[in-house]
Image (cartoon, rainbow, N blue to C red; front, side, top):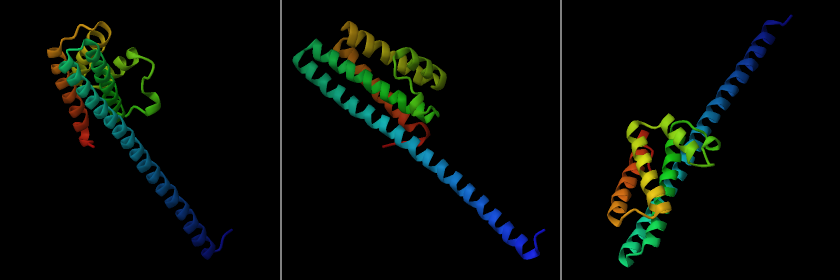
Length: 167
């Protein structure tokens, strides 16, 4: 049996332990939020960098009227789309290690599961035009590529603006 003074000391210690656990939990939650934002920002940064490279290559392709360089621009545009999509998925709560890395099927599934209708349409259109018609088939015209680059820029901006995360 504890004396009255010992009860107060034991209660104080228990309260101190509880407060430390609550504080640790809050710190862990904050760190997880910082990590998530860092991952989002990384993917958005990559998307923007690849978008700029796609623009530069498109300008070279147009200047030289070179279909091979245009295909390279399409490839970079598609990679930019993928990075922007990863940023969206992370914003929606998908962990980095759960992002689909193995191919388009998993990415399409995740986009259809997590993205709003408008972003799904952008993703599908960019995939078909940049990845399939532009890169693989080489059938995308310069005019179509210019429109797709505008769409890609909008896609990135819409993802960046979703819940106000920006660079």
